Image (cartoon, rainbow, N blue to C red; front, side, top):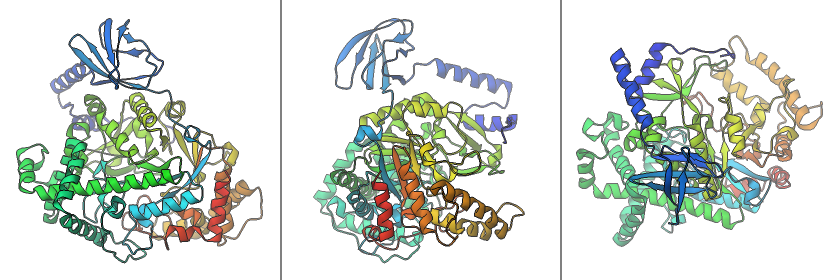
Length: 635
């Protein structure tokens, strides 16, 4: 920390290596592990990733090779000096030489920019789907309320709507309801599905309170979905089942996981790691027998995925029809819960016995353990990057852009052995260049934007790499400080960026100005040691002056309780920035005090539980809100 090199102790390294499958307790084990690694590195890779216009190094002998494109067109090229001559068209190719077949991915030089989609500078809101309200009562917002919000913003000139992850949670439970703690990143949160968008009958209305009671709402939703499915004509059920079959074994296994989780969770067994060992193998005899014994239950969960996929597709299609160049901006969470569907079905591609987080630093002296896991770097290579490609494609199937949460994880992740603290971890590296190129390739194929969440200390070379790929970095008002501790001018934001007044994890503009975040910090004992609420207020008051001067050039600032002029100025600030995209959270457009999530808390703060006061269309009609939207629209 503080710029000093940190040396990871041998015992910590040994714990991480063991979890990665490299036994290292004795010299003999170390030698055997090194031999296995050497064998893996010398084996023919499942996929080689290259770039348009550059020769591709290949592990093939010099000589002729047949290159087959996705459209079936085949040409003969010659490998010389271990390199394939440049290919001019991005895409996936199959190389044949003798008995050897190799897959080649050729990435474009860069991702699409807003200008490539029709507008050099765009704006849009960020919304938390469950917080939205519609005209029908609901315990929380679904894709129906998202659709209404998208239409309301499209009518006001927005080109995009950023949403938090819609990854699959654990079906029907009120546990792990954070969108950043999913069971699977490959499938969708079925609790957000809307039958009417899929052409089916609506679900019963449930009156919702100001705070979402997830423990009640999600089981009720699952029960309503079961009733809807049971009432469908058998022919319709069969048709939906056949359509789901096009999504292959992965969907079948995920539906089986949800069925098993619904069976075992009431017994107190949370996640597949707590299930009887016979069920740990998704393709084993016990899981297969359960599927045969419970075909309707598995079919029901396949239906729920169809419903979520169809209704989310409808939202994106209607966004485009309403004139949005991007539509939905999807969010890819950095990891998944260890006991969830992804770790059960993709055993070889995931880390096991390791959780991810952040090392100790001046802002977090104890480090962070997020309770999540992610892809294994060696597992990704062994599977030809198929899980990463599937994740990108599934997200872009319903969106015009993606935000990669904690994008530093494409280069390295801090991993923590089971039972250890965050300080017991170490960084493991990922095939950064390959993952970046594949993201650019999939974005090119989908004509979609890529936003790389790059807040924090970047790994060496990271910024240059994403800039070269034309991925948009995030420039959040609160973190854009000048050398004199003020806030940088709007003109200093780079064009290759997303200018933002805040995120779901930061105080709202109104809340910061009023000191609401300081109230929470004082109540939860999170102020700096030895600092009183009054002392924190004194520091904040100085910062208020710096912010107001940076936003307006004026020295006479509004009173701490007069936040509306500051919200107006903050919105105008990001609107003036040359960034290709400006994103303003709905909470800031409305001038609300409270933020959706307070990092580092679970039950202490109502994370992901707050509701909006009314339907989005009505909220946007407020004169102050309308004026802020007009400011953005004039970009």
